[in-house]
Image 1 (cartoon, rainbow, N blue to C red):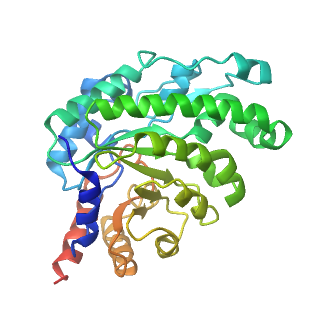
Image 2: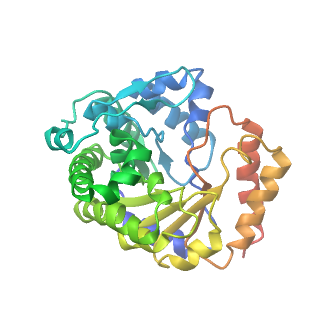
Length: 336
């Protein structure tokens, strides 16, 4: 469904009622009786998981699995799959300037990319609310191709080679986002968690400059970019905002009020209930209390959107999800 996202964001900010958009798909997989491996390899299963969650819970938008291996696999990286955990990258694909030089930008019919595009197309075809696709950010992708520890040293030893790698990652991600947009998605959540390991200056140089290129090419009134950085504890929010994204999604390591103060008032600012220690491990009452506390703390900020601090893991108790939304409902009932 085509949605004027600029107006939709403005309406969310203008409404006195708070909304929630948790990054949550694994619970839908479990409701279907499927495994994570089923969903990350089959676009139909992925779509059905998103659909069943959308029907069961009042999220203001639908989102896909935050699988940060899809793009690396397309480049040729080896991926480890397990039944009920998200896939992970194995080893290094490139380790020398020569290998970076030779690295080819993959086509969109490579590996599992068609299945992810298919999932977005199926969801968008019958959606009645925004559909947020997902992809990895350029620095996080480069780190998966080069090795995360190695790239943090190579940035300073051989920055030209790393910037070439980042340029190739950016070109590919832009192409992928354009395909997701053409599939009917109303926006994309770009996950750039590795950039949270960097200082503001380094984040600007090795992440935000490249994310901004993507934003400039794909974002418009009908397609919004939400930049996710769950590694940021506050030191690189300025660099995140430089990208010009329509929204910013933060992890549980940051003070949400500080993040709100550092972001534009006309951008959505989302977060940041801990997906593991709270949503998965805490009691239902603790989930309710933590959610209510976050809503209370952020009451003065109309552009705040309640969310998980990252993609929620498998096996979250459904009672905890219910209490997350119950807390939101109870909070909204106190508003005039």
